[in-house]
Length: 160
Image (cartoon, rainbow, N blue to C red; front, side):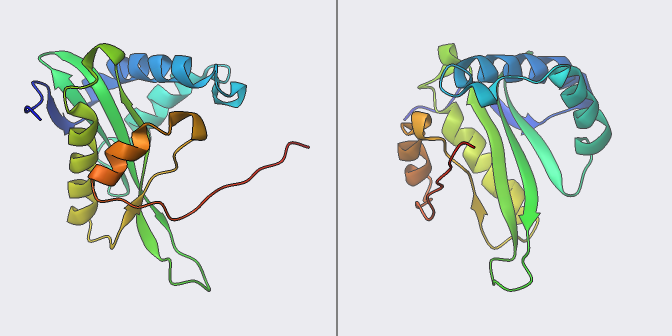
């Protein structure tokens, strides 16, 4: 696979609006599969505020972006999560919102974002990381498996 032409880096405060645009595109892909993944009222303003106040310079989370010149074309959100009073699961990394604009898919950016997230988790001294993959995005399973991840859980739900 050729090296992606976009560069992955830590998001900066001035990226907020471009990241919101990526979130809007991501939601537009998710919502037709499951309306619960549609945006809540004022979601993007609230997310922008959350990013600027809680994610920039956080020791517990980071937003990594793929930048093609000045334009952001991909994003992944990394968080430190976990810990359980009984299980040895412990604190670990988890990524969310892994998204690349359709016009830039197939360039290796999805994998580059996962690799950058892994490095961020490794730098935090975490023992492992995970992602929750929605059923309708199963093609991403091959990308995650190529990054050395393995399937370990299955989620069931029932609407009430």
